[in-house]
Image 1 (cartoon, rainbow, N blue to C red):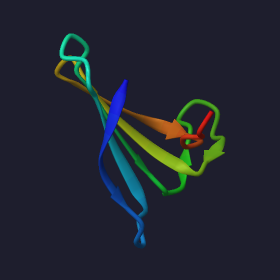
Image 2: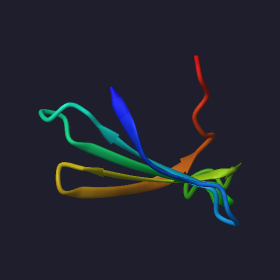
Image 3: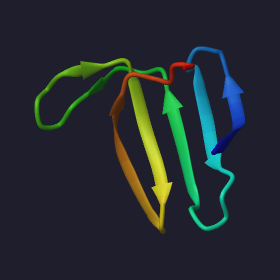
Image 4: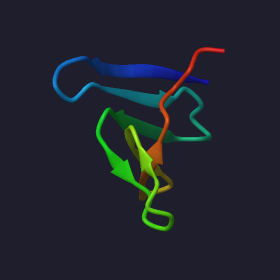
Length: 67
């Protein structure tokens, strides 16, 4: 489970999410920016940054869809 901490819809639309479970601290930021996979070179529409266990991970993504 997560909550939306911040949502912006300006030139750099982004959403920031945070886990609501204290035993699984995770924070994710998705930005609507061009991103190219470092291994395949494939383009994606979203840059993703995850903060988890004192680590920062960066990559590309498609965004979030409601199920």
